[in-house]
Image (cartoon, rainbow, N blue to C red; front, top):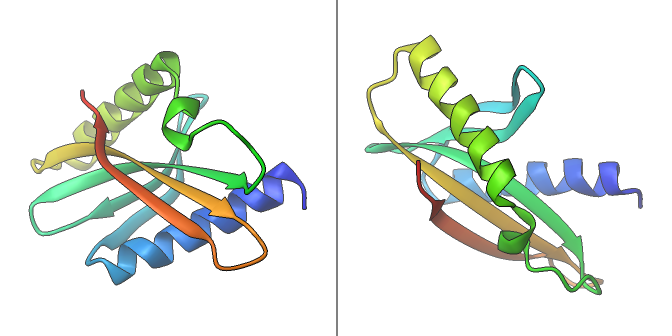
Length: 117
């Protein structure tokens, strides 16, 4: 399975995971300039900007480590633009969902408020 296919599959699984945990999905693959936010979801109190990192079981890099400081800055800028564009007043959280695929069920790790704005 290619990295692109694995990534898209991971984003769909992450949406299902968020829906099962009380989130409403607002956007998928939302773009601002050259940056993309994988999932924008909403709970009663917060708007969540979610970066999804999908890995095969044999990859060593932890999903949270894969979101570099530069990537964090870009996501924060894109999220800020989204909030202003949509006139959203809710508090924002920058989250990461790590999904590890193996021959069994995928393993989910949800890092809520993984980094701050």
